[in-house]
Image (cartoon, rainbow, N blue to C red; front, side, top):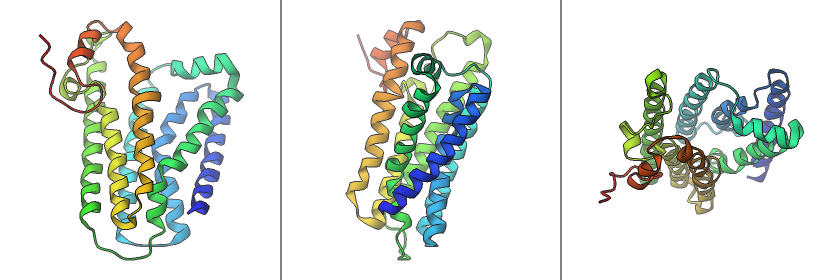
Length: 257
């Protein structure tokens, strides 16, 4: 298990380092975000071929992670290519330079890939050709639902931003009327599904660290909290939106009187 973890760290360290050198030339450090999704599929594929455990469960998890990862990458690429570099990266570079940017963002991402992918690593080591059980079946369903929610939310936001009349306006339609960040909620669901799927075959509760850390980052570090600090001062009506709408989980609107 530890060997798989080190292999994934080494592989992704090499990959993000190459990407970092590339961003020095194109001056777009935010392109590392595009690698995030596919990194899990590539890591899983690497462990899959190293262990050569051609089980049904391994094929299923490769498909799930592949669909999630490459959909996210295509979405981020199509979004980022149309705008300037993410201000977060500009700010970090301006403060601590490109070397600091490499260690603070790129290397942290490498470590996160290794930790978040632990349920995948553990599953890939299983050699028994077990049938799908209740936990794994529920896990697959949650994964698919998470992908669907995240995809719909991203599509709805893309369509909203594509209309010039909506510039500077608040998006509170579709899934966004039930959650202020339905895309992050869908992402979190996906990783809880991966954990449950893996648990169905490994019975290892320690792997829950993966979705816990992922959800924590989505809410407290790089997702909800970060965006909320920016948006509540920029979007008219966002304070009311905060008071009436769930921040993360899809829920009916609050009836504030």
